[in-house]
Length: 134
Image 1 (cartoon, rainbow, N blue to C red):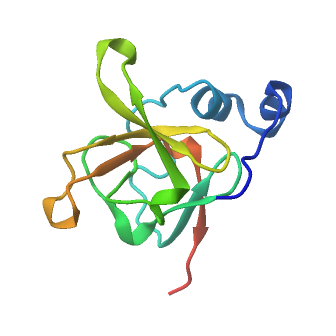
Image 2 (spheres, rainbow, N blue to C red; image 1 turned 30 degrees about the vertical axis):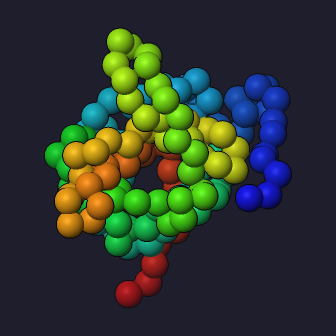
């Protein structure tokens, strides 16, 4: 992994929408069933909304019924970082972009067993999508 992207708080605020800033830089969560990609069936690559790093592929996206985009795995395990998260009196595993450290969502062990059993539950506003032509 190359050097992490580092920006000041003011630079992040200028580069991101208020919702993206709240989620990506402050660890917030968008409301379920409201994001652009929770019910998207477009094919392509999902990238970090803060730094454009390649994170997930539509081939690994599935309908978890949770209201957030869910993936069975990242494009490369090195593209994300996993951190213990005990906020809100819960024990979870936070997912961050390895390139810029932005909060993306959480990973759980209740995904499709045929695909490794993981559910990367990611905020839509933490992502951008590069569509793939069929």
